[in-house]
Length: 325
Image 1 (cartoon, rainbow, N blue to C red):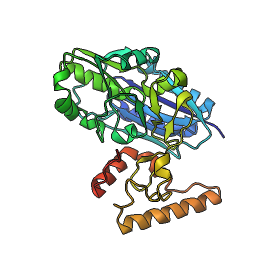
Image 2: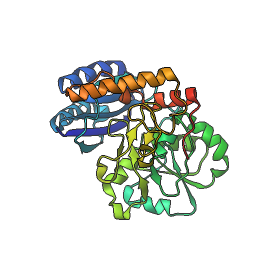
Image 3: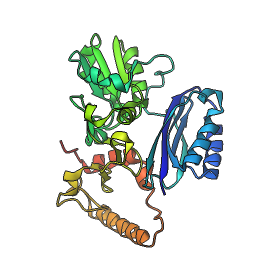
């Protein structure tokens, strides 16, 4: 059965986020909505899936609040099961920069429509930066974009201090998956004194949705935080897979490696996993295969969705795994 996936975010004054958590959780369960919704006093950020009618109903429910009347969302269709449960979490930020003084509602960079983004990339006077994390950049990015080599968005400020201090008088453009990180990153740069800051409106997803492949400067696939793992032009499902050993997104070259063991490890972590961790992954994979043969869900399947970024960081630090370059 096809699933409709909706991604959206909006910065808004939401001091009643705990109340929203309760009513969203109740309404999502009633409508069979699955996915992740993050709430904070600064707004909402979500990727959810359901039937087309279910998505329409939950979006209508959210937009009844005057703070979200103009909320826009992006839809895509997939035959895959993208999520296995609904999570409605309340956090300090809807995207974690670690600086509460940054408010995109006060100031952000200049939005660039996807149709005009190629001009930005081809302008030699503009430094184009990929604000996503290292494992996201690994499977795809815009041609000639700068990779900050960050493991979390919280490292953005450190990157700016070390690498962009001398760029305040120069033009800087940035992009991310759906636009939310660039809202904060551009606001951050302006606060730090950068004079001319641009960012891709709606992020990579908006670009892949609107720009035809023959006119595209995107190279590879776009990482997404659900069981699709990645999408390509037209927001169609990509081919990347996730390593359950280290949470690193895998490309074709990784899947062909002798060190790749489905559900257990990959070239990035095969030599780093301790025996206990490996045995646990082998058993987990065995249980999943049994569940699939019996056509039922395995309780461990939603782990891949819950904390992809968190687990990736934890395992790389624990096993001292360095990303392949």
